Amino acid sequence: MTMQCRTIDDCSKDVGAECTGNRFCKEPSWCDEGRTSVYKLDSDKAQMWVKSSIQFSKQLTGGHEPVLYANDMTRPILYPAPNFNTFSVRDVLQACDPPVQFEEVSELGAAIEVQFIWNCQVDGVRPCEPILKARRIDPLFDSQHIGFSFSHPEYGVGDQDPDTRTKFTRSGIRFYFRTVGTGKAVDPGEIIFKLSTGGALIGFAPIIADVIMLNCFKLSQKYRARKYEVTEDIGDYFEGREQKEQSMKEMAQDLMGEEEDEDDEYDDEEHAWLRRFQEDNDDDE
Image 1 (cartoon, helix red, strand yellow):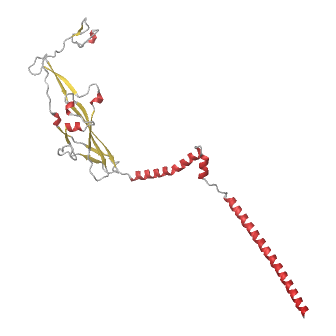
Image 2 (cartoon, helix red, strand yellow; image 1 turned 90 degrees about the horizontal axis):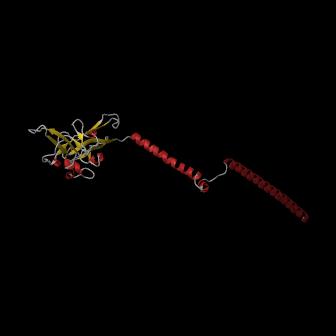
Image 3 (cartoon, one colour; image 1 turned 45 degrees about the vertical axis):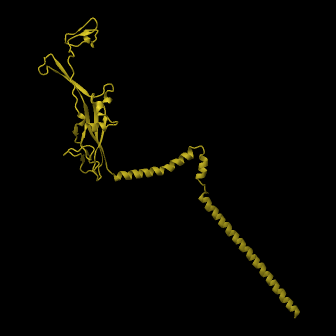
């Protein structure tokens, strides 16, 4: 009843099918008889021993040998102990954001991406340990059909008739493991370059601010009047200074000439007084 048709081409090929008058395909098919057997396992307690490592190139080590980081590969260490390498299915589901409950995905299954993130200071002395991150990705593939499952048929299983088919459908949780990381190292040359570049940019800041305020703003003339104090030309300054010194010399000479004239007048008066004094003494005798 699920095979509607308009022509024979709408039916299955090479099975002797025909398109009936009521527009349904008539063809050999498997009948769904018998009961379905369901088997559930407590796989949430299953533990996985994962070995993860990452290597950083010589560029971070200044041309020395590459640096290799790895978790312990000699013995299982349960999550979340330091340098872990073993965890259960439920641990991974709880590490998702948001956490995934095993009971939610036990029927339809799920696809989980697990990342071991190594963010290491390559030139440091402390050991580098990975960070575990997980996320559910099956809704990203097809939001209408979530989960993870697959099926396959087997014909004539055991003592069954060869015309009998058994269909096996399996659902579960599929994990995609990835190792990613970022290596860091201190570069003195880069520090000096950043500091020098920053200092140069700081020096340009007041220059750019002055250009904008002097040429772009409405009150740029007021800013110019307060920023600059216009002084006289240095040539005019020295010329005025020479003229001032010359005038002072002339004034000094004039004063000295006046003093000499006064001294001459004083001497003439003194001589005239002495002559009168002598003449008076002569008359008395």
